Image (tube, rainbow, N blue to C red; front, top):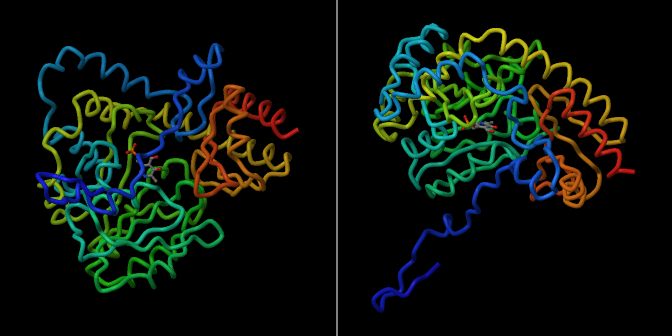
Length: 368
Ligand SMILES: Cc1ncc(COP(=O)(O)O)c(C=O)c1O
């Protein structure tokens, strides 16, 4: 990336930025359907809610549409007030972000420099790595054990420079979770300067009896930030709303770094309304639970290894190169999520019964 500028050899970007590749989103269903000339395609690639957005959120957005000439509330006061009440914390302990994605990035930007160090699992949510590379912060990507975060190995990777540890629970892409006792141990035993970020994007789908809701563990550790999102069970991925619950001191620093209007008005009103939409949340959870169980059985019948999941997706080991299968499924209008770095595995979002019928039919054809 060296550029010749006014006769001086200059480096345009740092080597870590040069090494980055843009985030690969799942292919949009409309694009695939248009390419194939079919009425619709089934997108099971981005862990969205297949039932759609909360209807209460849609109504709230309609009411707010005529106000969009105004800047949003920069402090997201009403939404933060609702979230603080929901979690039984003070408003200074809640910060909203442009998706939880922005909050992850802000944690690294606010607290880390090139002299610090970050720890996360591998494979886990790719944005942890991308953020560290973009900011030039050294990191350790600690291999999972049995597709699950190896908290002992992650603790062992901590150095005096470690400032942040990310734990996705349930993990993306494997769907596995770490149990309460293991997480409690970790939170108590890590050096006090380490900020532990428990990323609970899929918390609403977890039903294992030892799944630890990290909000309830905040008493165990000062530097604990819990991240949640409205992109999954609430069905508001396009609006980009996430939030952090953590110590006021840490959130105050992050708040100084964030962009002033990071969450739009429609996102704020929709998220507030969706929080109260019990019926949408309950139905979404039930459909996911039933269809997830169904897919585990049906996919196993194809001889595939399916990792037990606490989320709204399944991590599937095909035992053969996935890329050609992915392409053939695309040709049948079914979009799953392969990973370049994991050539035999793919992540499949749990869809509605109808979506999953199409997936299973297409897989039957492709694997025949
Ligand atoms: C583990 C995890 N964390 C965070 C995010 C980011 O979600 P959002 O930025 O939509 O809130 C995702 C998205 O898929 C995720 O899987």
